[in-house]
Picture: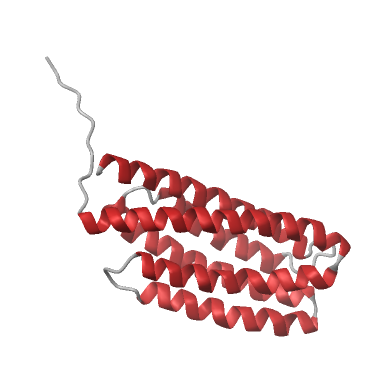
Length: 192
């Protein structure tokens, strides 16, 4: 008679603590993204100045989120996160400068940023999946960010595109952060 057993990955107490901290962070990042989507959807049609400010805020928030990620995960190599924080810091300034030239130029800068940070997210997801499990949403999100960034660059000069067209990108980001948070909840529960 065959016995079917559910395999559970046993993680260290430090990894469980990291999973709990990342779970909280992922919920916060999802909440920010949902709020940003709502605001940019409203203001991209009614207040171009407010929409432009929101465009600058998005990569700035990524700097904050990345620094919180570093704090949540005290072990391991932090180089990808520090690179991500640096890229997002430069992008925040570059988007502000590019907006002076026009929205298409800002969308190109945002697209380059989405490609670079998507690659970093993909790499981190792949590294963390063995330690924490539940990283497939982050892996998919990183890949999708790279594709989204490419489309922002390709379609930047399309007159039907604008800052509001980034709302879908941020909405998918929120969705993937929620999935990852729920999945990490399972990791924490299974190893409590």
